[in-house]
Amino acid sequence: MRRVAGSVLHLHRVRISNVFLLDGGPGDRWLVDTGFPLERGTLLGELRRAGIAPADLTGIVLTHRHSDHAGNARYLQERHGIRVHAHRADAEILEGRATTPRLTRRGGSHLARVLAEIENRFPVRLRVDRALDDGDAIGSLEVHWVPGHTEGSVFYRHAGTRTLLSGDTLVTAVPPLIIRRGFGLPYVTFSTDPARAIQSLAEFHGRGFGYENLLAGHGPPILGDARAQALRFLEREGVLQSGTQPSMSHVSQ
Ligand SMILES: [Zn+2]
Image (cartoon, helix red, strand yellow):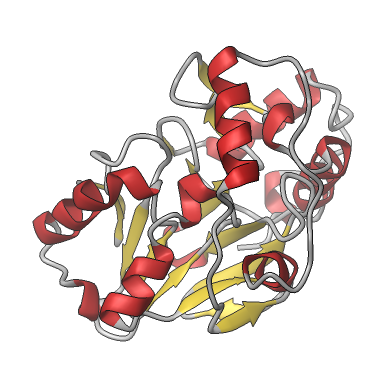
């Protein structure tokens, strides 16, 4: 594990997708995503290296319901009693109370299509202890609903370290695994509604929430100047029009 931004650790040996630990001390220790089930042993090893027993966790917060992010949440919940938090729209699917379309898009790599089929056949099922809504606070994290990649995808913003945890809605490498480094939009093969995800990205950045560090679900952490870099990427992609974004002086702290 590596300390990336103040109290935030990257459990970097978990490789299929990123898992972060916000260690704000007792009562404010959050595991942000949990990795794919195959990496459970690696995840537990990383927690050990961080000096954290699973039972020390305040809770798990999921950026979204996909199995490479939520894959070990049920184990930690059932084995160690850790509470699981996810946005209400993904919670309904995780609990089997709502359905989602199969991932069927062609394109992408062969590996991506295989992984999409795994997601179709073996979706994560678990009980969500608290369903989150846009604008909620969970410990020291703010919840921002950014639907599209999944129905209940969220950003978590940690104002104390000026960090944005973006899941798969804004990535810093092309998943699955790292094929190419650099900013990326939600991977179409794995997204319920890619156009809605892009709209969510535009809306979030248009509202001017500040951040300096970006910790994505896939790809390396971007430490310092991350929002400005993200804005340039989003303008290049046509998600945002250049010159229309709030200047940094208007960015909320
Ligand atoms: Zn995903």
